[in-house]
Image (cartoon, rainbow, N blue to C red; front, side, top):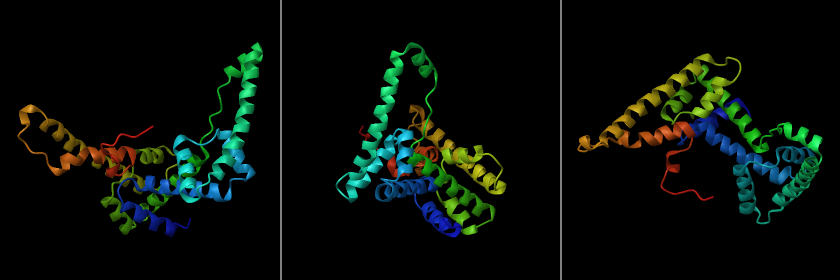
Length: 241
């Protein structure tokens, strides 16, 4: 995606609640599932990738079915993908069953750790997220004042993405990295102060002291920093299995 277009999308995402990178990753997941259902269902390489991964993670399996049910009704894509997946799964289980009946072979196979394959949609989403994060850092490094102001007014980026950026090999955009790191630390320290006051004022001894709006909402802002989710996602509704 062209850099200028990425910045436009980033600015739009920064003006919405939650981590902008998480939001754009979600959009990337929607796009990946859409392409899979309508263009890649019968693609041999795509099928091979899905078989090697053993299917999709629970979150993206649900997204896959929700998208197909909401758009077309018949779940033909899901049937095509998982019929093929059943075939490869049965072959894997047959081999494991045979290995259990052959003592030496069975011991050797059980001694080998399984190769961990990531959900294909997760792979695409992760790469999209790193590209978006890189674009954000590049714009901040180049002192894009419009984007910088949007960032300061936003909920920031979540700790998962910040840690992923800091752990990535190679030093890139040092001024921008320092800026985001310091901003995140300041946000955390500020909200910790509000949370300590929230805790103190719930002590019986200080029950007459009123909570400020900042103290009432500090925990939500902290959860957003830790998860990337917007404030409205933290409510009293219990998630169903």
